[in-house]
Amino acid sequence: MQRELVAEPKLHAHVVSVGTSVDDGVIDRWWTLAETLAAMEGGEHFYTIGSESKMLARVRPSVCPLCLHDLIGSTGEAVADNNLESLPSV
Ligand SMILES: [Zn+2]
Image (cartoon, rainbow, N blue to C red; front, top):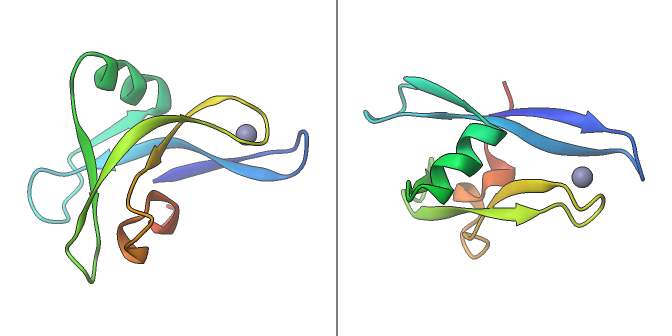
């Protein structure tokens, strides 16, 4: 997962690309934000998996609450470690 900082309207981070893996934990493709959104529009499904819980969370298009940019987010708020926001930045 790669993030970039956005300074306006206040300093915050956007997810700009995500790595996906078919096999456990080995990233075999990096997707930009635009590729991810286009693929989701085309019917692809993305999930995050918790490193501890092994729970899947669906990744969905979302909108940044601060600057209203199109972004991606995950729906796994109930489980801390599969939330997109809790994945490590690289
Ligand atoms: Zn933003």
